[in-house]
Image (cartoon, rainbow, N blue to C red; front, side):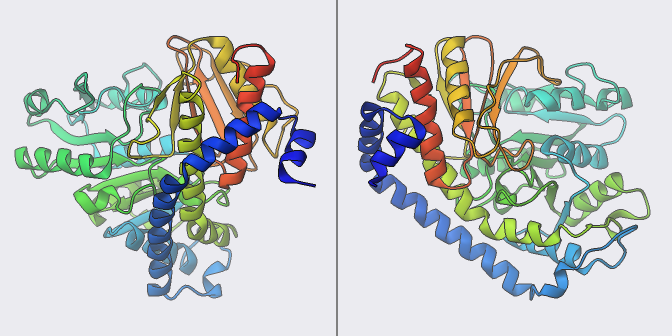
Length: 427
C-alpha cells in the first residue's frame, strides 16, 4: 500500500489536503536542511559533554531516601552544565515543572526588599501568580519582593531608554522570558538576549540576569549562558527531556546562584547534597541525548504548520522564513470555532487519548477558559505533540512539539482536516 493510500484509509485525510500538505513539504526542503545542520551540531555537543564526564552504566543506579552520594545525579548535573557552558547545574525530579523551576531560582536568589524587573513585558500566566502580579497565596510579593516591567516596543524590540530608567538600587534580578508564552510577539533569539544582558550589565554588573529558557533549548546552536546569562531555567518535560524524562526541571548557570536555588529546593545546609533519583536517571540521560533530534523534528513541524496555514490566508508567527528561537508556532485563527476544531484535530492525531475531544475549561493559573490538546505519554509534556489556546480574541492558537517530525506532520494535517470537516476552511 502506498503511503498516500494508507493515510487516506487509516487517518481519514482527504486527497486534497494530503496533496496540498505534500506540496508544502516539498517547498520546505532547503529550510529543513538548515534545521538538520543545527540538530547535528547540538547532537554532537551533547555527545561531547557525556564523553567528557565519562558517563557509565554505574551512573544509572537508583538511590532512595536522602539520596546521599548519588553519582548519577551529580554527573547528570555536570553534563547539563557542560552542555550549556555553565559553571554548575541543578537537575532534579523534585522540580515538577518549568514554573516550579523558576520559582525555586527566584526564591533562592531574592530577599525581602529586592526587586524583579521584566524588560520583555508581562511574564507567562503561571509565573504571574508566583511573582504576585496576580494575587496568590505564598507569592514573592508577600515576602516583600517587588516587581517592575518594561513592555517591548511595538516593533518587538527592547525599550532600552525605559529599561535604564526602571533599574534602581533595589533591582536584584532581571527575568527574561525567551518564548512568547501567550503573547503575540516574536520569541527572543539568543543573540538578542545577549544584547539585552550586555546593556543591563553596563548599568549594574551585579544584577542577576535569569532567562526562562522553556521551549528554546537546542533550537539554536548557542544557549543564553553563552551570551552572559547568570541563570537559565527550564523543564525536562519540554525540550531537554527529549520526551523520555517523566518529570523534572533544571537550573544552570553561575555556581553561587545555582547553589542558592538548591538550598531553597531542599533546605539550608543541605543544598545539592541530597535528593534521591528513584531510578529515573537513565531516562534523564537518554532524554537529553535524544533531545536535539526531537527538538529538530519539532522545529520542522512548526515551520510546516506556518507554511500550511499561511498558504490558506492565516496570519502566522513566526512566518515561515523567519529565524526560530523556540519550538512554538502561533496561528491567528480568527475565531473560537477555528481554535477548537484545530485543537480537536490535533488530539485525533495523538498516540494517547486520540479518542478524547478536548473542550475549553477554566484551568488554574489562567484568566480565561483554555483549550489544551495533548495526547502525551507524559502528562503535560509539551515537547510531545500539543496545541493550546486561551479562548479570547484574537483567538491565537499555540502549537509545539512532536516526538518526531513525521508525527508532527500527521498531527498538523489532522488539525486542518478537522477544520475542513466542520466547514470552517476550504482547501
